[in-house]
Length: 277
Length: 343
Image (cartoon, rainbow over all chains, first blue to last red; front, top):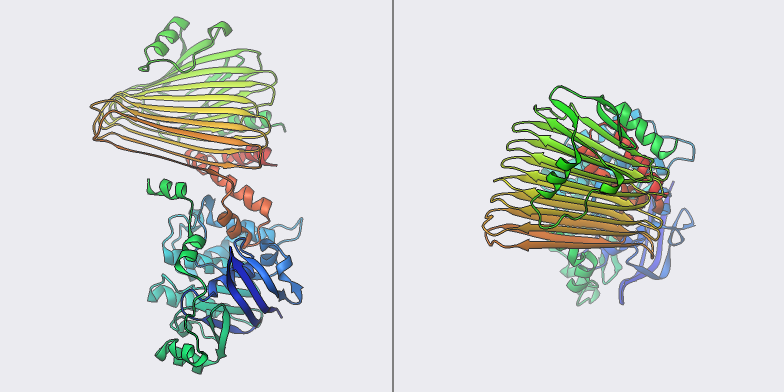
């Protein structure tokens, strides 16, 4: 049984405070969804939980089974059982997909233990087939030249292999067509168990047609402003978010401006120039 | 097993067809049909170098060291399944070798040239490849050395019409190293791509200079440099793509990528394009820096320790080599030579 506890979490990127007091508990066996318009801090929350170096925690706490997550490095958090399926995973040229996953699985073993190559290949091939990915995937370089949909599926592939205890899926539905969304949904649903806590982050209700959630939270202004069950989901689906803003007297729900987003997602100029070539 | 012994034995085990030089002497040659080796006199070597279509030779053969000169003639289409190893090992204070690869019309060869400079060896190695019309050469070179020696390697190539040269150079030396690759595209639609992969550590000073010059229209030249510098090492990439007047529809491209580890290592890339014709396609770029933070974060978010994540990213630079050399044992060798550098 795993419990991820986020308490009054405040974090900033540069001078901009994005998370302004998030409190949320996810236990294994549960599926939570965080919804909300763009720029309200949903993805930042996911990144802060995983320990992205661009964010600085100002206040609050994150614990996993009582252990202080904020005191752990990103790799320690992963080995403790946290997983984040990223919105824009990095491309790593020259590193094959299978080598990467093998190394990640080996990192979880005790010293002296070794991953059985035969078992690994069998599990890997099975996961690739279940996600309807191309067979040359193991030999392709990590995310390099992958389409948006392939990157998303590759994140789920890693989740299948690494078997986390708490998984956060950050906009896993964006860039997926209906068929791909169905495949991803089926695979994630198949992983649901008493040993897995899920946190889904999404703009749209449509993801929840494929992966059902027990609880839904709405995020605005860097905080969870409303939580509820399927009724809340349905109402958001038909009416959008404006009624919540009205109810709570929120004028501008955003904490991340477009400028910030560019900085967060930006790349250095030479790198871009090289890719244009 | 020390790296030299390992490299020698792995190479000799992996290739059935081979030419083995030790301290300037030809020790062994086992060649497939269509490949012949013959000694040539130094006068001819001098003429071949002097005739190379370039204003000034970058670095010449050390004639003081009484170099041995050989011509290797390829007269058949040999596919990648029949690779030929040319192993050059040197322990002498001064050792100089000149090789002329003569790839005849409609012939092809896959060649793996390895330089092993050990003990106090100082190896000066010059090769010149002539690719006749419609020939192809798949040319991989692997250089290793101990800390105490010097390696100076010049690879010249003259590529004629419709011929194609693919050159991949791997540098795992531990000492001062200079490598010049100089390619002249002299016939229409001549094609050359040259990839250098280099790792420098400790106090190594290394220079990699690649020059591709277009003397014919519709010729294509591609330069790629991949480098990793750590410790107090300095590494310099100089790439020049030069298209002469009237050599229309030619393509000259170049990219430089590098990772600098620590505060004291230095890696400079100086890409140059010299274009004297407007109807061409040309471009260059350089991306040199620390290990990409986003890549590190991503790998670490899957549980890889920082050190393992860094090693994996650096290992990614071996990819062009592994693509160029199919032999599984050589891949392992590359990994081990890299591990020597990164541990």
